Amino acid sequence: MNTSSYSTSADIPHQRWLRIIPPILIACIISYMDRVNIAFAMPGGMDQELGITASMAGLAGGIFFIGYLFLQVPGGKIAVHGSGKKFIGWSLVAWAVISVLTGLVSNQYQLLALRFLLGVAEGGMLPVVLTMISNWFPDAERGRANAIVIMFVPIAGIVTAPLSGWIITALDWRWLFIIEGLLSIVVLILWSMTIYDRPQEARWISETEKKYLVETLAAEQRAIAGKEVKNASLSVVLSDRTLWQLIALNFFYQTGIYGYTLWLPTILKELTHSTMGQVGMLAILPYIGAIAGMFIFSSLSDRTGKRKLFVSLPLVGFALCMFLSVALKESIWLSYAALVGCGFFLQSAAGVFWTIPARLFSAEMAGGARGVINALGNLGGFCGPYAVGVLINLYSKDAGVYCLAISLALAALMALLLPVKCDAGNAAVNPLGTHKREA
Image (cartoon, rainbow, N blue to C red):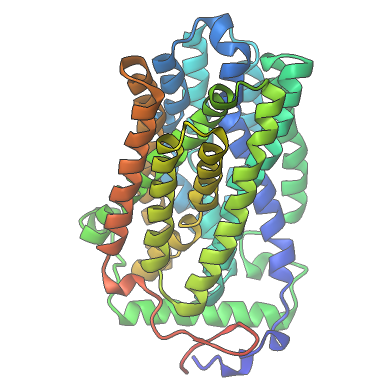
């Protein structure tokens, strides 16, 4: 299809950026807040009250990702063939109930069970929202759209860090879970009133924008079919070597992300000997850096069409900063600067990484492929926190952090080994910064 008539931003309305991205982003922020508030609850009194050791804390942080496995592929398929809107709506209800119950636990085994159930309830979220993004944004915009949505991680960190520190200081760790759980109900109301699964269903979209999206997305699918990209059963997709490269890459990446995220408050508290309120404020800066990093790398990737390069570069930076945070620990502020550097690179590869499945699989199979990649890759979210907890018990926090740096370096290597077809190819950029494709 010739899309030259849509070559400038003036030709196409951009309502989708304001109507679709914000409610998805807010729902993702709430899910992440419910996921990581345990990182503040542990040093904020939960560990002492429930008698939780470092290895048990790592297990409680990581067991979430075992439950996270169960709805990954079903969630992606539901978003493709059914309604991602309804799926996320019911998920918000489950997040609220489980989070409130977590604030009422009386022993570590109840905590483990609820963390597992929260993982199940949140498991379909990312493949669902990424599929919804693919329904609304063509390939030339998808890197930036993915990056904005995945920006829920740093934004949630910016909100969660001071809020958690303040709630724990003013009340206690139990109210942290209860209050943040109740926020899910507020978001549910917003979600049900604003989101649509596809352009064809939205009442607010103009005919020009709808026609552009339907035609452009259909043309991309025809182009994928012309390149003989997999469009078969899930068993055939699972036999694809590149899929397993993406799974392994994501595994080592998530090991680093969640090892860093779930132990950051504890590391900051011991590094600076600060109160939980002060730790909450110190934890803001790494997440502010993460927003900048995501914008920079996703924009560069969209402009150049290079996906592999702009996945591997942030991973190298993340690994290096992780290493320096320990190597420079004799200087509190240099070590803290390295931790902020980790934040800058924390999610910089993620938005670019999630553009790749749409280039390798048809729309029908991409939802399931995303689910498999996210499900198996996110086992790293279990291994990272747990490995750090075990290494702290056996050796020191330094050993745990070095382990995360090695994992991120392996992820960077795997990104470089991905096939050339993962890159976006001949993408040209006009003076306005929007992409033009060959007719």
